[in-house]
Length: 168
Image 1: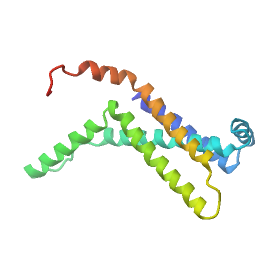
Image 2: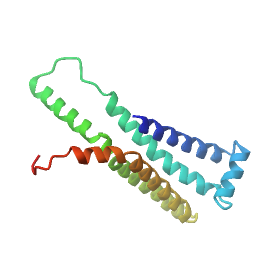
Image 3: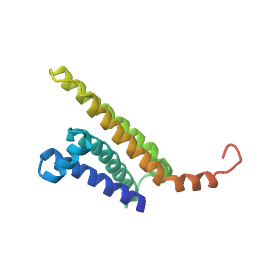
């Protein structure tokens, strides 16, 4: 859980910094982003946005899975069996070892949405901004690599706990 809180705080900080820079509300931040982006602060903003969106989305997915509880009212046996099966599949899919897989899916969706945005801008008569799209991709990939490094111990534990017997 500590790793998820760390990823959520980094994601929130990345999104907040990108938003502050985009609004031009902090002059020192704009100067720093201009320097880091080689004169284009929007490149750093896109990198931080890609990083922040993936990390915050992962935090929300895991938080929702951890907070969901059993329903209090009685159900018919068929509905109860369906609910238990669905709940176990959802919990299995949000185990820590699957977090990197979820982040790859979310990063792919974010990159596709960013590409669609850039194509829409190009069709509207503006230039296709390859650098901004590449920074979105780099930010999303960095978030996936960051989560992979954080979850390395969980992967190791999962590998050690697997049975060597095939079919189990």
